[in-house]
Image 1 (cartoon, rainbow, N blue to C red):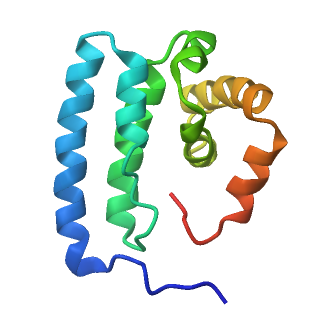
Image 2: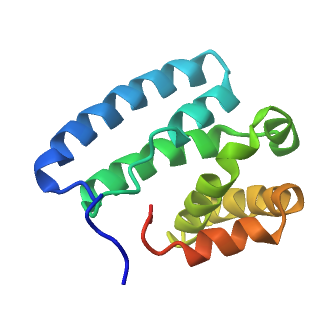
Image 3: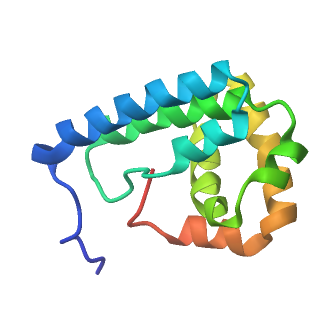
Length: 135
């Protein structure tokens, strides 16, 4: 059985939402400066996987989605993106694919292809096998 004692409950959700709002403003600033990879890194950092609160997960998805959709040069993105971000990025790509939104799915598939080339199948397996830390 999965350990759940580390999960953040709803009483701390407001604090998490406030941090996500601050992160969103920082990302918008980075996007305006055309620092797209930095915006994506910022979006992926501090993702709240250890919460069951869907408001937190949805709020963070919106921030990550904004950064993902701004990426035009996927190859260039991976030349600047550290491998430590690969697993969490893969989780968000699957979340994007689950939306069914055509532009989002197309972008997620483009990134997924390049991420799989770089990180290998292990990245996919780790993402799918981790049912505790969902995004």
